[in-house]
Length: 379
Image 1 (cartoon, helix red, strand yellow):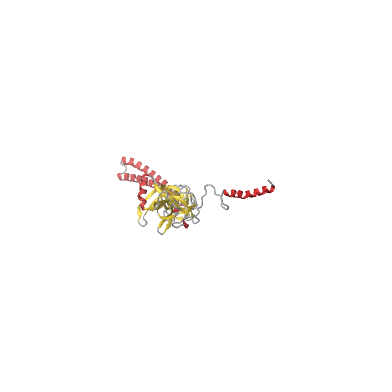
Image 2 (cartoon, rainbow, N blue to C red):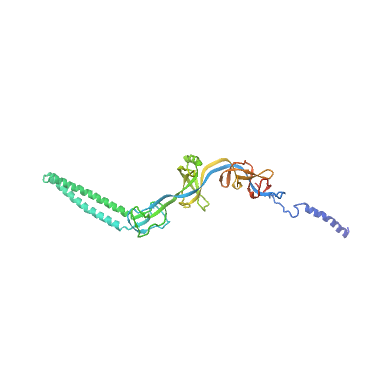
């Protein structure tokens, strides 16, 4: 073949090669789809949504409330004797242990009173010894008929009175020692001290103002909360068998404190229709505090075969809660629902849905009844 013929043959094959190259793969300008990628429908008016199935499962029964911390014990420390504060041994807000020295009063007046009582005892013991000798001598004289019955009785009475005086002196010494011991004031419980209410030099009275310091025991600690009265019977039934677990999450915390329900109040509050409960928590790290609010969760066991949907599927409307249900033709419909408990972003469905139905969990803002949708994420 001549050179010109070969060129003409190549030119005749060029359109065929171009057609063969365009026949495989995607059309120009269309990206290739990787395996498993969601294909957008041809209807460009369809709205992308995220969905979930209505399913039956076991759901824990939990009551949620707001609780308030309460000290396990609160003690207002007062002086047992009148005196002058000599030294304060604690810092306000300090954690103290039972038996720690808190405050010392001036001991000098009480030491003097103790010395005076001891001196009186020594004097009266000498008097007792003398009356005992006289009684012994008068006993011999009375037997010999030298003294009368009256004189003998008088010596006996003097000896008995001296014995009573010595016993009174011993009691006075014991009282003086007790008064002296009250000059050192110790923590009656372990806990955290409040504000420092007295300073060195202040005068205090016995069992009277001012209070020296207030101590709150915070480990363990109580948390009070209230629940609707319709849960009273289930709670009482559970408490008859065992202690109910309760959780308290203070503000800013990610992990709750675990405790046990220890108290059910003996009356329902008629103004609110609630019953007051109390949980006890070890609180070893002092995350809970008296007067502090906490989110409470009371576990009442588990409920079997419950219809649940993600909480974000539930929308609030003028006629109540509703969800968007995806039908088989990929359009949505509005369904009124009745929702029960919500736990861990799962809501119990009491009415309005059946197991296996598909509800919209994200993208509801662009939906109205009859809107065409496609799934932005596979089920």
